[in-house]
Length: 128
Image (tube, rainbow, N blue to C red; front, top):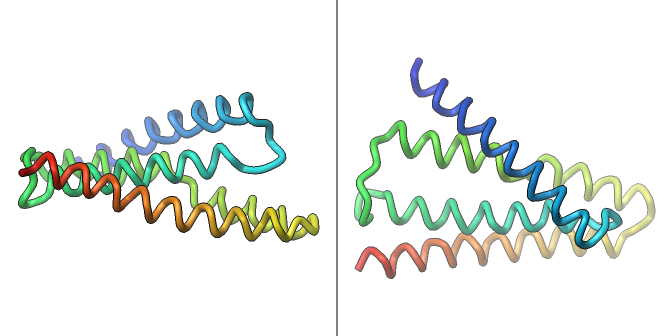
């Protein structure tokens, strides 16, 4: 039962961090394109790749299972926003903003894959 409490707490913290980051990005760049959501997903993808590698069985840091669950499922699960991404992409498409909808999909998928690879690579280098 404790693991659910850790995940719930991590999710709450991740959700608050997402709200703050998304709001800050929206203030900087406006809200006509979901830059905040893309940024959150890229950062979250980098961080989950980094933490997964750094704290995995061959990693430099030994973290108990509940600690990994707290961070990787809770914090990063609450922080990343693929449900928001999907809703915003649908809204762009419904508004006839096909280029924006397609750009959102391509940028999010490619940049998040690149970010998770980068996080993994940085942690792999640190593990050596």
